[in-house]
Structure formats: structure tokens, C-alpha cells
Image (cartoon, rainbow over all chains, first blue to last red; front, side, top):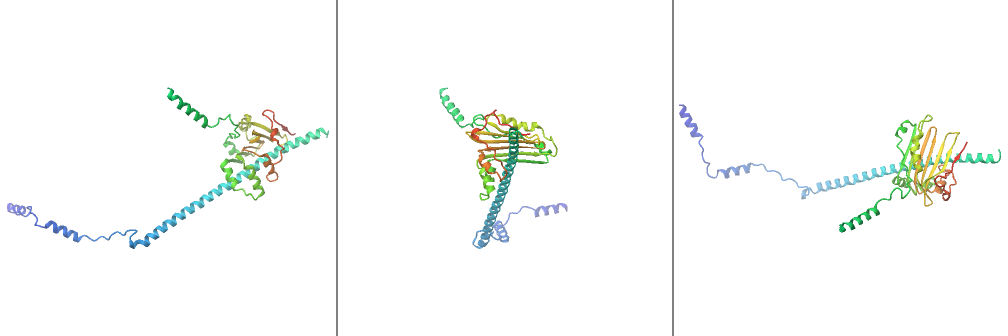
Length: 121
Length: 197
């Protein structure tokens, strides 16, 4: 009984050569069943002209804006540094003059006291 | 051996011609002012101004030529290459050491510097020393050391200082006329000294 089952199973599972044209038919079927992919839309294709234009214009506007902002900030920084330098120059000259005044007062006092001594006051 | 001599000689000549002038060749009016960071912490008020040629030029662009004070300031800084100011004010006497100032004063004994004025006030305890460096009958550097019991100030101005222009600031910043005649500037060691009572 067992032998009969075994022989029937092995007979059923024996390698069988495919029929003629099997491969071609299979490939044709696979190709037929493959979903049609939409063609990617090219940026500068005929239909995409407005999109490309807007994109280019936006990029250019962003670039111009970035350069403008950068220049404005640089100008502001330069102006701040300039005003700070100006303030420091004025402060430095004010302090110098203040100390020169101190020396001048001392020299003047000495001259006055010498003159007083000479005149016998 | 002979082949090598000429290129070496030329290279040495090139180096000699392109090398920067040695320190002794031209007097240098720039003082090495210490940072005084310890004093800055102790001081109630401190001023540290460092203006190099680039900053002076930038400041000049922001001075209004139509404003009399700005115009006078512009004239004064025109020939300058640097202004360095350090000033410290303390809330008590003797908060700083004389050695702090001596570090700067010792540099003024170098050749080229002439002490123009030395004042000492017993009343206020204020000392003001003014030094000037002259090259070709032109003031190229000014150093001012003012020490008071609670304050000391060091000023170093570098460049073609036109004292006449500085005089013109009189009334603007209160710069007095010191009647300084550069042609009669004192030689090193023959310094003018003034002491009041």
C-alpha cells in the first residue's frame, strides 16, 4: 500500500519539460500585467514651463533678498563700528586735553608764583 | 663652489633689501602698555581705548566736516597712526602701585623721547609728565602720564602730531595752548621741569 502511494507521488512529481513556447507566453503575460508607470514630468518640459519660471523667479528673489539683507547688516555693523570709533576718538582727545589742562594749570601756577616772588609780593 | 657663491650672494642681497628696518633704524613711538587687568578689576572706572590706523580712518569717515568740533577733530587725527589710552579711577588713595606706571615710564628713557613737561602739584598730588618724540623736526609720538592719588592715565599718540592743530581744539575739548616750539624741543636729558607749590 505504502509502496503504491510512494510510486504514485514520485510519478506525479517527476520533472516534466515545459511545452513549446511556454517561456515566451509567460514573459508576454508578465509584460501585459505590469502597471503602466506615468512618465516623470520633466521640470523644463513643455507643460511645466510656468512651474519652472516660478521656481527660478523665487530662487532669484530669495538670492537678491539674502544679498540685500546681508549688505544691510554689514552696513549697520560698519556704521556701529564707525560710530564707536568716533566716540572713542572724541573720548581719547577729551581725556588727553583734560590732562594737558592739568599740566597747563600747574605750569601757570608756577609762573604766577615766580612772578610774585620777583615782585616781592 | 664658485657656482654657488653668486646665487647665495644675490639671495643675501635680496634679504637685506627686503627685510624690515631694524628697530634702531627709526625711533618707534608706540609704547608697550600693559593690560592692567588686575587694576581694571579694582578700579571704579576704567577707560581702555585702542585706536589703530584702520579704526582712526573709520572714525574719520564718521566725523562731520560741517560741524566745527568734528572738523577740528578730523584735522587732528588726519596724520595719526594710533591713539592708545588707559585710565583707571579708584575709590581710595594708593590703590595702584607706582611700579605699574614705571613699566611704561621706563620705556620713555629710550632714545628719541624727550620730556617736554613734568609737573607735580603738592596740593592735589597730581603728577603730569608729557613726553614727545621728534623725527625730522616733526612730532611723531606723544606720551602722557598723569598720576593722581586716585587715578592714573596713560596716553600714547602715534603719528604726525600737529600741535598747532591740537591747539585749535582749544575751546572744543579744552586743550590749552602750551606754547610748544618744536624747533626748540629739549634734547634728551635736558628736560624742562615745572613744579608748583
